[in-house]
Image (cartoon, rainbow, N blue to C red; front, side, top):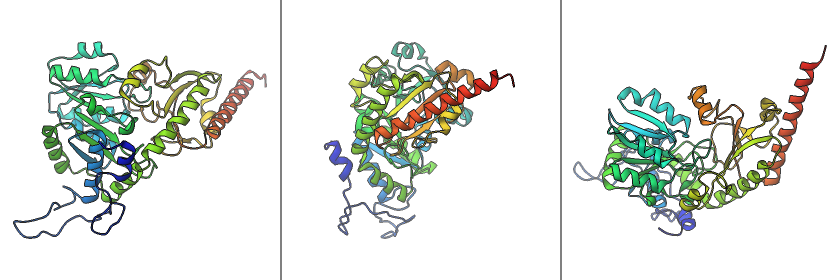
Length: 395
């Protein structure tokens, strides 16, 4: 693979040879003129393939070091396509700390077609081994996990899957191929919500998926072509454009996240913090071995004594919004936003309490981000103290 920074800028398809354009054109067409009844070019119908989408698929394949790549209309479309590699009666082992939408599509849709699953702590390889029964057909991992950032040993998972003839799937959204390449560690399928860091500007929906073998490529091509959830030409072009600056953005994202995490760890308002960059964070050494960074997502628990609603309401730079990975900083309450599909008990068992806060750290000035949080903490503390005074007032 070419040096990653250069590959991100030039891609695999570099511009347009017909016109000299330095950018891949947007081929905004649904169909293509055939040369004859029995002869045609590489493109026939855009559900099957489109030149702009093909350029993106070639790029993500090269970035991940895979055999073939596929671009879908959203991250969840890519997740669903990956899960369609299984059949009725199959059982999956799924990371317990995984995006809530993945659980929703399993519960609300695929379980009706006979696909079963069990959520387990995939960071515990001994537990993974004990959980394999004859009906288990695959292991689905998200690492770092969402929202508690648990780390799973990808080489260990790949080894277990090879031993038992299982299919391994990894959601690589939080890391991107700039920081982590699961296929090189033996994983079979890697996927991304390209809506996040790969697009990078919160202006599109897209999902990407890459497979390791020709056999899986044939299966995925059949799924993609016949289910039809493909990415349109314009959003394909937007992702290509976003990827050009991925290295620069991820470096700045991570620089800001590391600085904020260190500051938050000692803050009076923070009861607990989750960030893989801390040397004492569970899985830190595994993350150092399998990735070249720690990402830019931080989660923490706001202490009692701070009003939660006032904290969110007094933020100016951090936008309260679903999603992550854009240039702007976002903040979320996982229990009511990303993981609302889980029951309260399931959330609490995992540690996704109502006072858990997830930060997607952007590329703004870090001192201003720190001040934004500090101002919100102060307002939150004052709101709590005022509420206590009102409750205790004899009037």
